[in-house]
Every structure is written in C-alpha cells, then in structure tokens.
Image: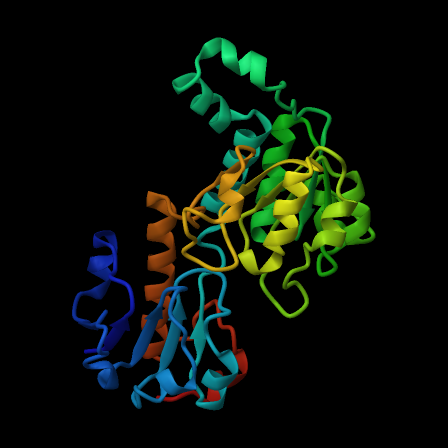
Length: 319
C-alpha cells in the first residue's frame, strides 16, 4: 500500500484512483506526514527542503498544475526525489478563459451588465462608448507554448491577426499555427490591440510588464493575464488604466493571492477579474488531478512518468 500526503483534498471523481492507497492530510499540524511516500501539491503551499525532510520516506513530489515556482526543485533533486507536474491538463480550460476575458473586456460585458442593473438601459449609451470589434485586429501573445498556441488557434475564428513573442519556439511551429513571430517584446507591444501573457514566472519574466512596457503598448489596447501575477508590475498597470492609455484589462492572476476586495485594480470598471480560476472547470480540474495522481503512482511503482521536471534524478531516485 502506497501512502500519499495531500495538501488539498482530492475530488470525488478521482477517488477510484486511490483505491488501496493510504491517504494522509491535509492537516494544519502535519500529523502523519513522516509516513508520506508522495506529496500531492497545490500551488499555495511552499515545498522546500525543510518540508521534504519531514518525510524521510518521500519518493515523489507531484504538482497539481503547470506552475511549479512553489517547489524547490533543486532541493528535491539534491535528495534524489523526482518532481512531476501536469503541463497539458489545464491547457483547454485556460485558453477558453483567456477568450472569456478578452471578449468580456472588448465588449464591455461586465460594465454593461452593471449599468443595466443599476442606472438603466439608456444610461449605458449616455455614459459609455462602443466596444471593440475583434475581426482584423492584432492579438499579441507573449508566450507561444501549450496555452498560447491554443489561444492562437481560437483567434482564427475571430479573423484576427496573431503576433507572438517567444524566443523558445521555432518559426515552423508559429507558421503551422498561422502566427507571426515578433522580433522583440517591444515590437509586439507596439502593434497589438490586445496583449495576452502566457509565460511562466522565472527570473527572466518577473515584472516584465512594467511602466516602460505598458507605455510601449498602443493607446487604447487591452491587457490580459492568465499566466502568473509575478509577471506584472501592478502599480504600473493601474497607472496605465488610470491615465486611459489602456482601454481595459482582464486578469485571472495577481502578484499576491488571494487579493483583497480593496485591491486597486478592482476599482476600475474597465477591469474584469477572476480569482485564479482559468483552469477550474469540471473537466480541467479532473484532468489536473488525474494526471498528477497517475504520475505519482507511476513513480511509486517504479515506472517513469511522462512529465518529469528533474529527469536527471530518475536513475538515482529514492526507491
């Protein structure tokens, strides 16, 4: 019988995968964690060397999702513990949510709903200008990985030109998607009517969207972020919105989560925000959990999983 530690409760749909498995946690006092052979990891808990050392039998760390900045992968590697994640699982739901935000901001859906329920029908035409038609506009994608590529595919239905900046993808991949590659981030920002972030949080990308970058965006452009809040200088974004340089923003992620209802960005009627739920659909949630659990159990059975963050430890892993 394998023993798994959970810092978030598994969904009922995945309980069949846990038949014959001993389930521990979540527990604020970490009772029983010393018996854990696997950590099943959400994004709101830090998994550093100290936490790993609480579980001397630990054989695998499994991240529920794509981003793994909350896991000290180097510390895991030093302890010969494989780290797995679920890079494909959130793709569809997150790409769909990206478009939900693009459409909500471009068509002023939330502001119109609020006005209609409050001031009334005619006040909308008195107080607000028209929305944005997407056909013929340029969508700028910062990152053309799994999610960015899916967002680009959806853009075809809206007859949009798609421009992307991603120094790690090939011209052939972009061409297959019907996407033009920008020579630089600045070149993309200067041309795009809508800028959407799809990059991981790394030392290279943290606060990449600062005051200088927002100033490079077109007057009246829309900004979308469903990747990581760490990529954005939120004070600079708020200032760009306050000055009217940006027409609006759609945000699913923030620098510090959960955010307060008094967060400055939530004061703008031109901002549509959601509480980091882009991948949180019935199908997406199940897919993340299923992919994560299957890989954790594969490692415990001695089978190599498909998505290893530190493949170099596989042959010397804990057994």
